[in-house]
Length: 255
Image (tube, rainbow, N blue to C red; front, side):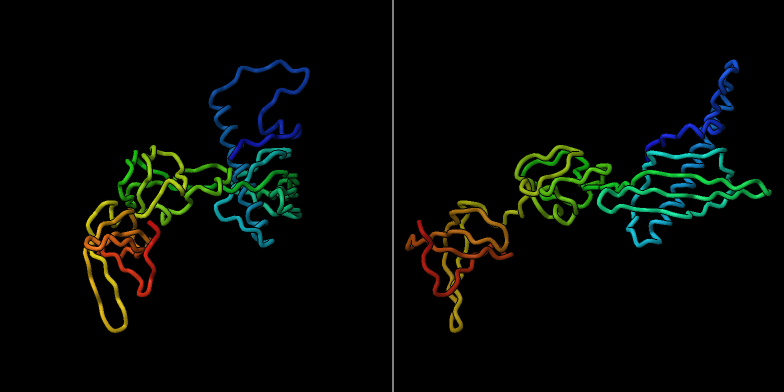
């Protein structure tokens, strides 16, 4: 969350020196106290605004507030009660304008705070936790989540570990960099040039023959295989056991 841009009425929070008075030496302890007070007030306001937006059926899961305008006349007490009296929200830009009433215990006068900002949604994507060489099957412990801030990832970036786990990189993947989906492929079950068993099944019989794969393929891919005896080339589907099943009545694949 970015630090808010406070308006001129917030001099008490920052401890600015009024005009005509000599600047006093800065007490480090006082500076730390003021910074802590500012962060506390911002966090309290953020929580109140998020709750108000959620009450208006705005999805605020994983979101934070970027305050671009904020006014206050005095520091907020840690036990102050905040009530969002009015809030307007623009879904297209995710910007809001809110009027907040802050009531502190002890009978002090309530404050009315104007807040302007936008809803920020942090996007996280899975990336390799270490360099991954081409041809290695990606496992769950090869990945970690990284934040991309509120910048949406490109459409061709893998956003879910399920898109990567069990796949193989087509090229070496660097550590910590979002992965483009076209750089992934399913594990090769049959390598090009490998000797395979060709299966031809019909309702009444089941024939097998030895052949050679002319393409590489993952489970479910259709590849070309050449019969070792007849040298006829047909198309078949790669099975999980590494065999290639030819559809009955299928025509020889183009050579």
